Length: 416
Length: 172
Image 1 (cartoon, each protein chain N blue to C red):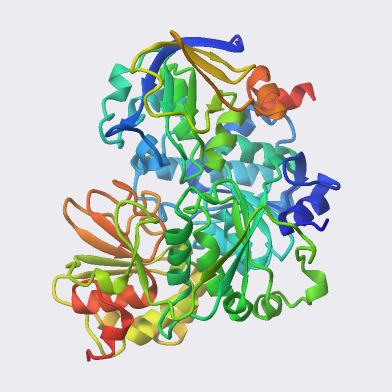
Image 2 (tube, chains in turn brown, purple; image 1 turned 60 degrees about the horizontal axis):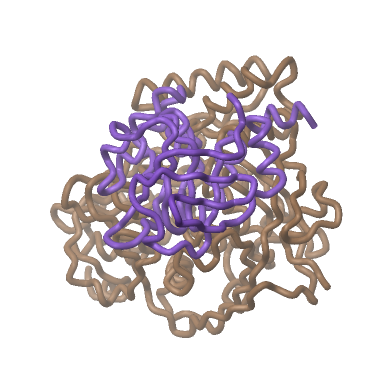
């Protein structure tokens, strides 16, 4: 019987000939920690790390993205504590200017197809977008990975999801991810490694793959692995033979298919990412604010699309449009190509690169009764403040900002 | 700290309406407003600070309490705080029908016992029952009621007995 993609990756990283259910110690190629929990990683290493707290410097680094630059004293303290530890141990810090760590790891081409990455970010399984293993973990686990280069892992069962057909024009990766959440909720894929197949993923851009994989966490899955397509291989400058794929004769725990033919834009209403509706059913909801960014929808492709939609249009009176590019590189490209001006002229606020509001950052918190459309990934009660957060793709977010109520990108075409 | 395999304590059953509370995510357990806290002792006061109906948990919890919840407990972020806040209050264990994957390993690695009771009926146990949780056999019992859950994995049990991942590794 063939091996699923996760079994192949773990087998090649010290797990020998492992199968689902085996507990294995796997070698980690990229060991990272953020400004959130990073200080606790340092604390653990100071306590348990001994004279040699770092196994391999070149594979170990910090990424600040949570509260950047720090706007609270505790965060400033934590970041500084990390910097001092990093200097002492000769570790690289992607500091408050760099952007979202999970994106930096892909951008720098550290997380190549088939590699393993861990960090203190629950969306590090975004590496599934390039057919690589990534996993968010707590500070004990990560400190251990810093010190030894290894973590233990129970190899998860694998399921296969085939997306049948192609969505309607104007439907994005986010809408497909939301359609998966509607189908599987947060329970059905719990603890599973999900492999996604179908024509749509074969043609998808790297950025689309990132968006789709980033919602694996909300599905309860360990990871959503997308077998590297030509776009992803080209980005890394490698061939199919240098990437890792599941064996063709793999038998999956479940073999699902999801019909996305003609799929229209979707939106997740509070209080959970799995509470999904077609956008067309929610167009009577008035909007106070729109957040565009996050590890789910903050790439150059996402923000270029937002800027193009905003060009020559204006945000509805009284609506806040908050835009946070994922990384400094994204910011630079938007700047160079004049796209920031489109966003600015439309009435948008553009912040520095990072996670925005997702983890107690500066951008995107809501007050009592406030309705926010967000391109991020969580809308649990209280998560983004006291208001009501809806999750949607870029087109829906921009259309809602311009029209002042929930709207799909199709409605935007009538507005100038 | 002695590492007992039989824990006795008061049950804190988390209910939402008539059902065991499911999908309690890490922002409900330990809100992101307090993530910069790094001292475990300071985390207890924020436990369930954003969980509807249980916001006063930190005031009412007693050392040796055992928490019982529904499906997918601890989904969401990777924050260790969501485990450590219970340790700070002296809570002995968390039991749920199922756990979020990251939460599960965070609990195991810090030596905090969790047990899965798949399919547990909503009303088998009563609020504040004096209960016995047997980590060896994976059973929860209170009075005449008893439910068989999953066994801890070998690695989880060994890490628990060692007192945490680093202590476990020292013995390897």
